Image 1 (cartoon, one colour):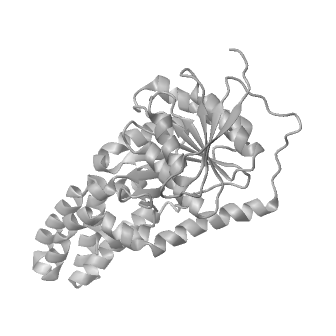
Image 2 (image 1 turned 90 degrees about the vertical axis):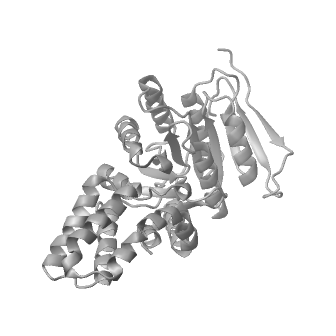
Length: 367
């Protein structure tokens, strides 16, 4: 493959939503070299930058509970029967009430294992005289669900490390909302003053780079894309991280090709991508976020297990939950895999990718 010189073009297009922000397109050369005098430096102040960024996103999630509340309306409607069951609860009806509560949890995709644990724990506390009213039972139910979400003590905020650039890889199956989630994450980070570089690592889907370029334009971010149709994803991501390192970007967001978790050759490509960015920045990627379609409910579990086994998932992004009544799957995924949910998609708007907050989630589905 003959070497070619990289070129940088400033596109004159601008987005209606961000007219003052330029969109810069880097076209990836077939080969590239790093200048010998280019050295990566890390200052102590960067540690504070990434720590503050993670905390700030988390705090904003707590303050924006309305989006979480509206996003889980269908799941909440499914679970509304619980309030009716507990309104006139009395000890003689315990078995009947708990059977119907169990059914409501199962319909909302809490999964049989968690549902049985919750119901049996409530039964024991009721019979032991610890729970004496419908309100107390509901409070105990909410506390139990919250414990499932928080017991592993995994941090739900982004862990961006201590060096710039921080690298986030986005992975998942086709159609789960992977590229869209990356764009929305870029928007959220950009709003906090973060300098973002996107990497169009989905080299299999013809329209993927175009889709990501649109997101780059909307958010005012710069983007690295491959030149030619036969570029390897690992090469695209490696070059993007090199640019991020040389040009002082805070975060490099790496898109990857959607793939079925049963396609082992494509899954192996993810390993190559992970190794490629790690060679450029020690410890990268800082986050590997798996995007899962929330409408599939518990069917997402096999996907998550396979991806985790192959590349080691650090966090989950659950999308399309606003269109699903199966929000209980959030609890099942965290409990069974021990991987924290970091973001949830609760709408189609650019601001509708919300940092996950366990307490806000529990309040939203059991209001």
